[in-house]
Length: 281
Image 1: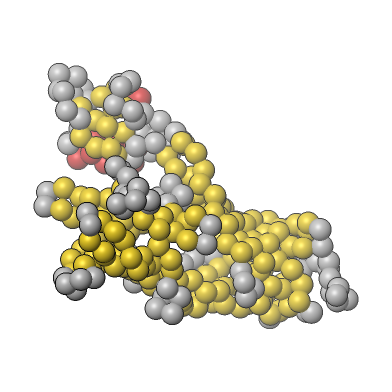
Image 2: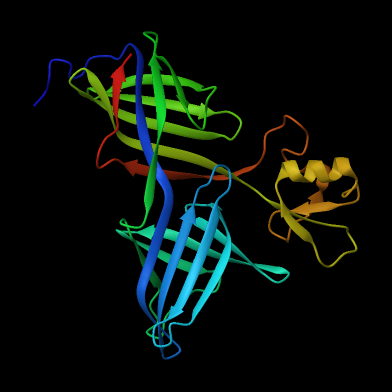
């Protein structure tokens, strides 16, 4: 049913709250590895700016457990989970596949049957948190968005698409773009879908011309910081693939204010089962 407000243009300020995962618990209840049955549990948390991770393996016959602790971050369409292992760091990758999640490493994780490690999110043990958000729509098509993560807000634009409101905001500092699709629910707006566009920039290995082993990889900004601190010099070379080398000062984005070389954009969609409602203020 279409209300009288269906398809009307928004005007002014709308406030509400949105939910995000505070801790996510992923489990594989039975994995057959080297003839033994294991229970696996992965916990990813967001605690302020910190993002701790825990990986638990439990042998089901003996209940012997191995717990690893580390950190996680959003990667190129995957969650990247890092665990210190002596002087090295072991990385795992978690990505969604249908309604489930796949956990893998650089060499490929498989059980005795050759199947991937498939996990499910335990919604009963996972926890969400809410935080306030505010949209402001101007009649000239400009928009403003504030949230707990962006208290100063970011500006953008809005337009009507098929009787729905599409609002797009760009964080100039990170290059991240958020696009919200909203529909009318009486006199209130509800968020139907959120699309995130996150750019990924090249990282570079660094070496001296007579060195066989390179260090890195580093972002262009980190190269500049290393150069300014004296760690790198004019003789250093850089390469994003460990094959083609250029002078470090020729790297795009090396000079402050210059544009970095972008590898590609990662796009992620969130469709809300229970759409957050925004009330006019």
